[in-house]
Amino acid sequence: MPAFRPPIIPASEITPKTAYLSRRGLMAAGAAGTLAAFLRPPAARAETLTTVPSAYKVEDKVTPRKDVTTYNNFYEFGLDKADPAALSGDFKPRPWTVAVDGMVAKPQTFDIDALIKAFPVEERIYRMRCVEAWSMVIPWDGFPLAALLDKVEPLGSAKFVAFETIVRPAEMPGQNSLFQSLPWPYVEGLRLDEARHPLTLLAVGLYGETLPNQNGAPIRLVVPWKYGFKGIKSIVRITLTDKQPMNTWQAANPQEYGFYANVNPAVDHPRWSQATERKIGEGGFFGASRHPTLPFNGYADQVASLYSGMDLKANF
Amino acid sequence: MAAASQSLFKRWQPGLIWALYGLGLLPAVWAFYQGATGGLGADPVKSFEKTLGLWALRLLILTLAVTPLRELFRINLIAYRRALGLLCFYYVAFHLTVYMVLDQALDLAVVLQDVLKRPFIMFGMAAFVMLVPLAVTSNRLSIRKLGRNWTLLHRLIYLAAASALLHYALSTKVLSPEQAIYIGLILILLLYRAARPLIPRKRNAKPAPGSQTARVVKQA
Image 1 (cartoon, each protein chain N blue to C red):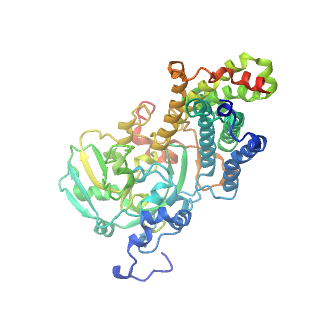
Image 2 (image 1 turned 60 degrees about the vertical axis):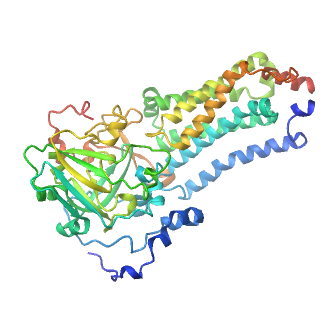
Image 3 (image 1 turned 45 degrees about the horizontal axis):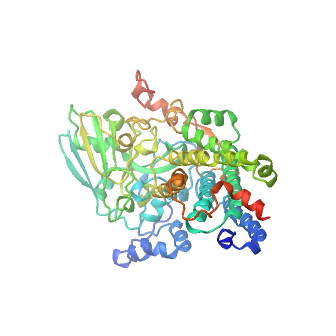
């Protein structure tokens, strides 16, 4: 429980977002603007979440908030890892709805704020391993995907869950530029048993506050035993299906990215080793050392049984 | 005629060449300072590595641009080409050092495996290996001793550039517009060499590319 609760400020009293986070203003302000973007966003953007403690915590040192919120991939905002934080100021994560449909008894469209109130939001500290061989430890706030799936009652025929990110070129520069890095919308998929696993989280916040735009506001997937790209951001649709869904990276480059994308030090990415990782925020320039990557990112005890009998080299 | 083929700013040339070395090394010094003081973001090693590699590419492009600038636009920067080429080599060496020391923590087994298994690292290493003899023979003594062979040997730069291009293109998940510009420039500069025999000479008095060294010696 946070010791200090900020007062509730009416929307009318809050400086319009465009006034302090306008992308053009940022560009014009140059270095000063960039510095401002790295400072903590004003309270108007990040709301404090009421969370309950959770048993799902790793003991590793948590990555500083500044690194978690300024260094990540979110190609909808640009290819550089600083782009999401710098170029997501125009993105509007409210109002927002998530449609859950497909092979379910009760298809529904949920309002994001109603969704946050519908389930206890747990704080979970997970390891995050990017396919590019760097890693973080992030305190997410969210609820299990299984809880949401229970609400819509998947049919017996449903075997997979497909996810879809929003397409908003006016607010997402990476979807708007002459050069399109990936086909939009970004899509992802899980097997139903993976989706129902208690570790699989729909995150609505991090560090006790609602998700910053650059980290996938207002709601994103977190599957800690898989490479980070499986954690689809800014979700608008979740569809239950009987066919294995295609995911964006697999479609872009099937030799390098598979459907499962389980963290596996024994299966190298063709262009880099997956045996070790560099922990972001640790050691700085000279102290940075490589750490061995663990099978299933250290969650083997909980999830290895999902894949018993499977050839994980072929199903990478 | 003589004026056109004469190097630019001939009078201040020796000083300018030293200034070029100093200026050329500034980005590395600045990036190192930033990295050491926490100014390179969340993944300073990767950022430093990338900055050094990018500067190597920029200097490679400048080095390769010297001949077309002279032949097409009569801008003679030949006196600065050695400095540009050597600076490029220094940046490639820094880039490799950071990869081996800061990134892989001198785990030579991993480095060796990377070089043998991963095409993009293989191409990068090949480019470095090809640049070594060019850097070693960049002095006047070697130019004189090797004679015609020096020109032949230094054509390796084209192969090294092609290797560097592949290294850069294969290093990322998605080819960015920035990458496309660098790759496009290097391709144009390489294609210029391939197409050069087909370009009709405007004046026969214009020096042939291979004879530049001979000219300099003659003038001296």
